[in-house]
Image 1: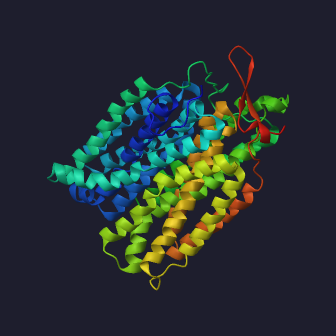
Image 2: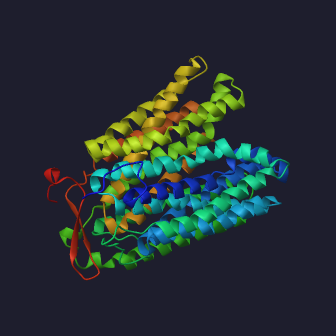
Image 3: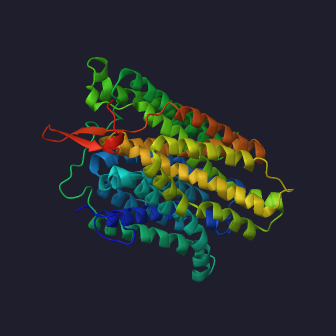
Amino acid sequence: MKESFNLFSFSGKMKVLHLSWMAFFITFVVWFNFAPMLQAVKASLGLTTDQIKTLLILNVALTIPARVIIGMLTDKYGPRLVYSALLAICSIPCFMFALADTFVQAAIARFLLGFIGAGFVIGIRMVSEWFPHHELGTAEGIYGGWGNFGSAAAAFTLPSLALLFGGEDGWRYAIGLTGVISLLFAFVYYNNVSNTPKGSTYFRPKNLGAMEVTSVPDFFFLLLMKLPMYAALALLAWKLSPGGVSMLSQDVVNAIYVGLAALYLLEVYKVWQVNKSVFTEPVPELHRYRFKQVAVLDILYFTNFGSELAVVSMLPLFFAETFNLDPVLAGLVAGAYAFMNLMSRPAGGIISDKFGRKSTLLILTAGLAAGYGLMGLVDSQWPLWLAVVVAMSCSFFVQSGEGAVFAVVPLIKRRLTGQIAGMTGAYGNVGAVTFLTVLSLVDYSTFFYVIAATALVGFVTLLFMDEPRGQIAEVREDGTVELINISHPEVSTKG
């Protein structure tokens, strides 16, 4: 008898789903434990506003490469081990930050903590192993939405915890406590989940060095899609240069540029090593997948998750300045945007399961473009309630779109799910860096219009995506082929 989808169950696949979203929730509490403590940290360490801004940049810098690396490790070693290790190891820089006495110590800790932002990728593979295709969008949506709420939970609870601990070191205890929770949950997770249901095969990639592709054009397409990730890291380096917040000297920044170029060339070599066989012998049709599917999802996640990260960080200020609100009220209004994650991401997954992957993404991306177009029109003449309604509606399309993107990710190539999720997730961070840079150069309404225009680009690229149909072929260790259903038989087609 097949196990039903019952949210109130804590056994079998539902236990794995609940423990996985809890793990993701904790990674986001730890990753975003700094923003609510900002003023206390600034006063305690005697930091300047520029130094605080630098810490915020460093907090996201490492997440871009981390998501790609963690995706590879997940596919190779399995989500159980990798998630547990990430939770345990990242508690160390969390404790380092709680104990920091100088800006340099705090900066190193925040930079290293960017790694915990990659936790999201691990659960995508874990959930895809436990749920059938017709429940996958719903399960991934719950995993993403409820886990993502960790950032809002940190904002709601940590300032109160700091006050509870009291004194000027209250913030240290509050942040340290998040590290303790992360460390303890690492053991809970490891002892209570397995990579696959009993009797199922965990398919691993043939090589760990780079993502596999299955045709010559896809080889070059992959190399092209890697470039924006390096460009985003170069942009972050520029922000730390004398031309930005002046944390690093121009010589150090130039060395980072050279290092990034060298890393890209190394990556080209790795991609060649893993995929050179496609130049000499074609991959059988049964084992092919189209890399354009990954590229489209990258672009969509660049827009929706990238805009979410950027908008969450600027929305309190936007409402405070536009409507002359006090900071507490502005924070509450803006907090509702993040609060939408609890329902919106699962909604995107559920709609995707019921009505098809591509059509859902087309509707949600169009809604996202319209939503940000309206946000660009908001000014002080608007009634506040209407501005909040527009922001909430926009938030629904953004986060439902994220849920719908990750309803497709596990349906491309099972053994590469971690790497595909890693690359898609990294593009979300690339989007955040891009949009926050745009925000530093233009006014609020232009910022919203730029996101809306990016969503329209995503909409056009979506037209080239194929609806996932039929089956994925994977090879077991004994050489036999397993066919994994990714759509209902009645809508499945060959090719």
